[in-house]
Structures are given as C-alpha cells and as structure tokens.
Image 1 (cartoon, rainbow, N blue to C red):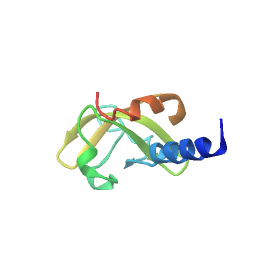
Image 2 (cartoon, one colour):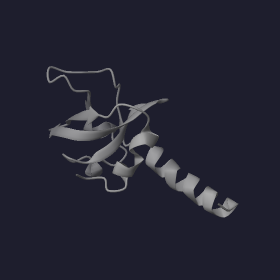
Image 3 (cartoon, rainbow, N blue to C red):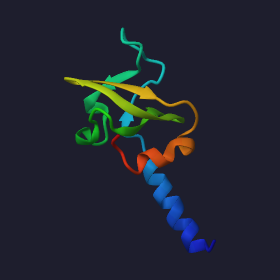
Image 4 (cartoon, rainbow, N blue to C red):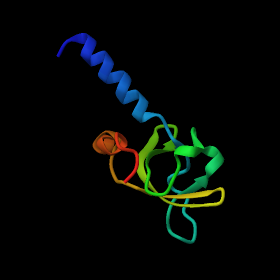
Length: 95
C-alpha cells in the first residue's frame, strides 16, 4: 500500500473514532443501559434510535447502537471490544 493510501485511510478512520456521544460507559440507569444527555452529542440530529455511534470519553470508547431517545436522555447498547472491531457498522450509521 502506498503512503498516500495509508494517510487517507488513517484520516478516514480518525473520523470514525471521534466520539459522537460523550458518556460514562459505567453509568447505567434502571433500564440497565448506559445513558447520557442528548446535548452531550457532537451532532444531536445523528442520535436516533437504531443509529450506530461511537460513545465514551477520554480513552474509553465503544461502538454502540442507540436503543432509546427519551426527551433529552439517550440510552445505548455498547458492543464489547475496541472501536476498530466494529468500525464497519459506523459506515452505515443506522440499522
């Protein structure tokens, strides 16, 4: 692979590693799912039920599916493992 292709791929991957919704992955409410507030989203319009997003904060990140948007509260189902393992889901962003 040439250097130009690697650079383009790295830039593309960096886009998918950006956190779409800031949240503490250890926070769970009565539903048993991690949650956050919609106004913590980079693009609140992209946070819709069924959407695949990157959630977390700092170095703790995961790919998750938005399970519910209830007013300003967003609940997600994070997938186990690193973002790289589930990157293919982010290309289509909704289920």
